[in-house]
Amino acid sequence: MKLKTACVQFGSRKPPKSDSKAGLHYFTIPKEILDDMLDIGFTIKEISALFAISESTVYRRMTAYGPKKYNFTDVSDELLIETVMKLTKQYQRCGEKMLREILRLKNIRVNKFIDSD
Image (cartoon, rainbow, N blue to C red):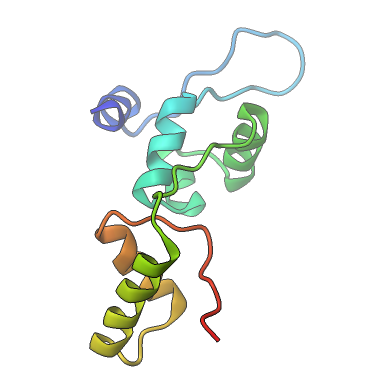
């Protein structure tokens, strides 16, 4: 809902600038909206196009807001291996990125895969 509100609020116009008289203009992107967009899977390029700002500005806001806390699924190694094995049997030519996306659709978020060898 926050994302929809931000899209309606900003629409096709640029985000509001800060009232500071010194230095370059500072475009405001709410931290919650930026985090939600990244969680949904928007790329930096898509976010910059949506807000009509440069990709560098998006990266600067991400740096200014500090490191994001990622929400990984608490899953046992055995269950993860079992799920990955089933998926690789079903999708034999599936790469790591595609596999990670399939897991994400199943609400399983992992930061990296473990080596089963």
